[in-house]
Length: 89
Image 1 (cartoon, rainbow, N blue to C red):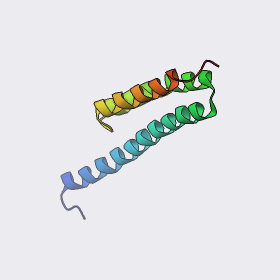
Image 2 (image 1 turned 60 degrees about the vertical axis):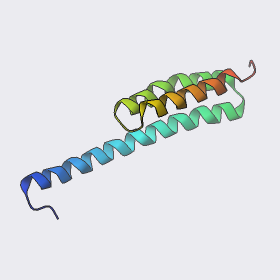
Image 3 (image 1 turned 90 degrees about the vertical axis):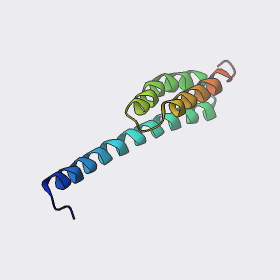
Image 4 (image 1 turned 180 degrees about the vertical axis):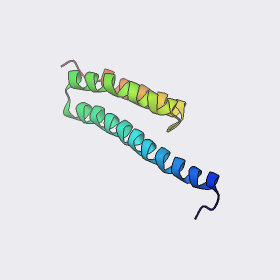
């Protein structure tokens, strides 16, 4: 266990950051899943709407350092490509 005041504070900070990071990661994965489910259902309008909502969440997750910015860019790009490839609804 932590002995010094600074080590105890570091433990508290780590716990707080871990919780925030879990929430961010979960929010990103949920938004990506919503887009993929909309694509799978074949509803282009729903997919487009879900992508519009997911994109800022993915980018924000990268800005916070949860995923690399190029990983976020790649995710957005691939989802947008799949939504764009859907037939007209």
